[in-house]
Length: 166
Image 1 (cartoon, rainbow, N blue to C red):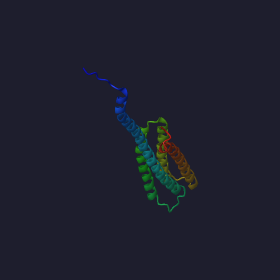
Image 2 (cartoon, one colour):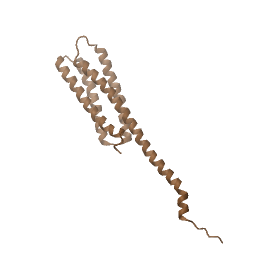
Image 3 (cartoon, rainbow, N blue to C red):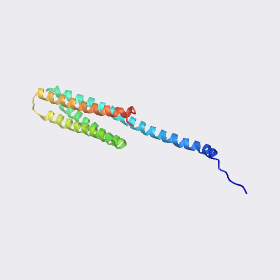
Image 4 (cartoon, one colour):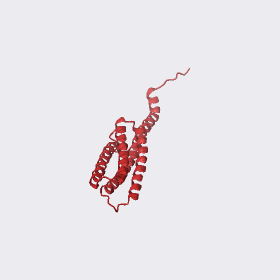
């Protein structure tokens, strides 16, 4: 009669490659997820910068409007600003679904509210009969508020790009 003797050390040596494979896969999987979030955050920051440039252009054109200003082109720019903001809204929803952080949700919502406010006020400024100085003050004020909201989002997303929030 033969007795089966199980050597613990031999069993451990046999399972070690499989255990190491699972651990390495798990670490890689976590790192890949962080990389996806970092790339998405980078993409959003680049889009925000593009929308900020458009916002600055609109604001400056309204602030220094005169009789020669082509309001049709300005309305088209405001419409483009609205489309790009809507596109950002989709990106914000996606990044929020990945991150699930309530702090970033507040910052993103504030940015979108400021975008909507800017669009409404820019359209109102085009139609209004207020003085050039008042238009300039309102347009520059909107520009500053929009830039401040953008700075907050970029600072927050930069932490994800640099892998600091995990």
